[in-house]
Image 1 (tube, one colour):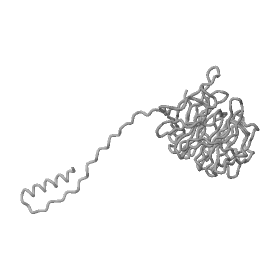
Image 2 (cartoon, rainbow, N blue to C red):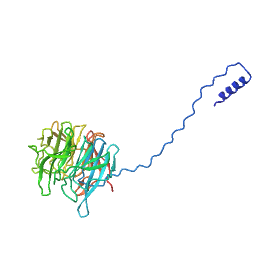
Image 3 (cartoon, rainbow, N blue to C red):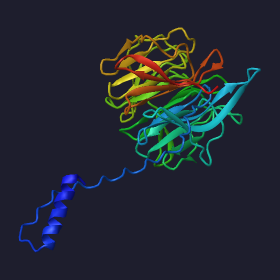
Image 4 (cartoon, rainbow, N blue to C red):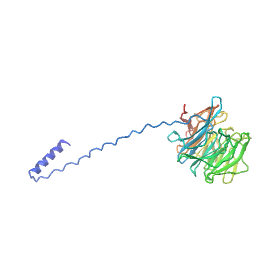
Length: 358
């Protein structure tokens, strides 16, 4: 309290004591005492994000409800060149740039070369097929629920299909599978549809259809409501784009002018740009990033300044939340990789965002 306020108060008390009729001065309103700040609690030390180990033949799908990339298994090579199958379920958060090993109570057996797609209606990542120690060309179908961190085995799919690829048709609520091969080297040209709600696989038998092949890739173009398929090790070295319409059960051939035909190609549909992004090659001869526009049926070679380099047999998916294509893993001449890359179509740039485990 200031010296002036103390003096006025003392005078007022003395006048009251003497019976004076002088009015009591009104004291100026006091300033409230400051509230001490709430102590800041120091959070526990955060466990650093540790990405999956290097691997190839690894499937990955984007779970739109949780904004996570879900990854399963893969393979590496032993000292003698033998294949070692890997298990484990991982989730990548593209917003936080954070990998988490999910460790569900039960999961599919260790495998590589499976394929996965996100079923938006059921909010499940669907995994089909793959190769493992028990069988090459598995017929298993599994569904993963990120919210409960659980895998559930579903109906058996087509048997002895390896290198077949799947994509989810949102409008029709079906997982579409096309092609693959068996261990005798026969390349399938069959089209299948999986209905999660009924838990059934149905062979569609469209005619005409693309030639038999394996390790091609497929994405769902939501703007045109078509499954877009390209590439693969085909019986006729087919360089053309094909589009599948589930509603009419028809395949339509598109342009045959674009990237050099190749196997082990990977694509992701950029929903904001309405473009399919392609990267990868089985023989490492073309490092370009390509974009396909189904509206004009044309490819554009993008040639960014940097890229993941010579790479094959990796995983790739797109997140609309960060508007980026995410790439993980792969191999170069049987040397597995474990970097995580992000591609921005707006700036035509690749950026490595996480390094492999040592």
